[in-house]
Length: 279
Length: 248
Image (cartoon, rainbow over all chains, first blue to last red; front, side):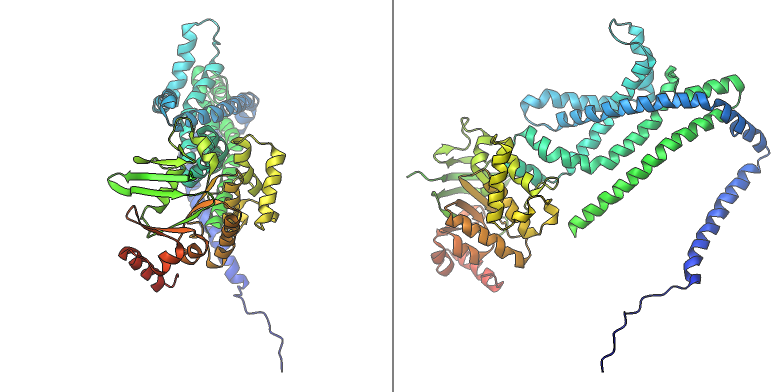
């Protein structure tokens, strides 16, 4: 007698087993944040702070100016990022070439990266933003926006060059050997074999850098560039209310959180791809 | 008669470690040489000296009578004439099979896209991997990847093909397909220097077998002689161990 074989049993979870973990996380999250909120609002100065920093009216009032400033942030960010990605790749390549003819380029790249990575971004912005226009050299622009952007590009490209370089070094030696053995020159080996793989290796790190740059553009406020933070400060100076800073913070968050999620998603996909390859 | 490859007194140190000790070897046109020996005996280094992936300390290597270190023979020119296939395939993972194969013919030899692609398709069909032309390497099995690597090395019409333990990373069931490709190449008259641990294959395909030990060629003979009646005690010991391991 043949009996139809039923599917092997799988673990069953009743409603209780399913909902208890969810409930536990909701409760624990509620307790932690509730306690923090209670602790902060229990301060006798909380009502004053709330008026000073979280006034809905002040946020609304300052918003148009802060948003206008933020639009400038975005434009500076995009332009700087484009130059950073290009310049830093050139620096990383200069640093990676071997041989006596490439020596001056290699030396320049090393000096550039050491120097500009060693200076705080804020200092670089102050030096270029105030120093170069003071030279009054004919033919050079004098605007704070221009020199501030240049300072961001110079500082960030030194970091990003090292990101590219780590990506190039992570490409397996066999790839270089294969390319060279096929007769490709040093430059062709880089162009066709190493750099495309290196960029794929470091894409999450490059996206991270872009998120970081997006926020650091706010540093240009110190040389008078009227970006979001500067506009917020102007409002504060006029009204003695700091809620405009919260408005600026919200705008920065709206721009950076999706980018951070994107970075995470790409990094996860990249990891899955590598895992699959090693299996 | 000039030899295709003529190696004299080749010596190479890695630090203080002498990995090639005055090696002499000549390879005639259409000849197939198998290099056997324990790991670290210098087989792979010897191959890599021939196309100058490794710079050697002394000795000379002649390719068709011209010193490979001669100024009149730039590195890239030399490498156009010598194909090499690695144990780890080393295909470019970001390129399709077809792009892997046509890269060197196009960028190094300056041939046209259509010409190189039709030649690539021809070779892929010949080695029964024609349907993978547009796939990326990680979609292929190890055996298929290694066959692509052989096609890539052959696409530039080299005068000599160097094979560096090309089946060592493969599952046993995939080895046969790669070895049959190499047999086909021998039939077609390709000059090859093969580093291998597949003794049965070496016996079958080689015109001459060289046993390397501690950077020296201890014994050099036709396969029948070397495998059945080796003269050097070290060769005998090596082959005895291979037999004990069930690999011959």
